[in-house]
Length: 132
Image 1 (spheres, helix red, strand yellow):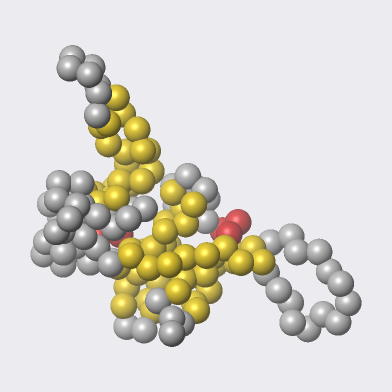
Image 2 (cartoon, one colour):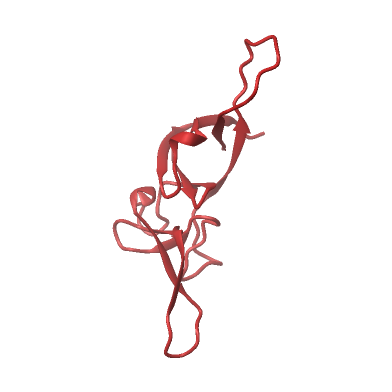
């Protein structure tokens, strides 16, 4: 069974931002990529670099000859040591997605509950929660 770890309130991590947390002796990067949350192990499979501190960017997309399309802004993570690129949404590398990947963790956004309240309340904030 996976353990539940509260990372932060959803309002504390805007699109394009990340938080690196220690969970059970593992370093894990949690990303807000365009309003969706993803989590990856903070270790590049190439040489163990702290992957999640790398540049978060986009990539060129398939296009017709002579034209270039850029997209997926905020979904591509480049290793800070050697520039290897990984898809934050899947953990797979861009150059060899079937054999080179980073461990991906489940992330959920859950309502903020106050267990001390004994009367109905409205939920105005949410938590980003990591399942590892």
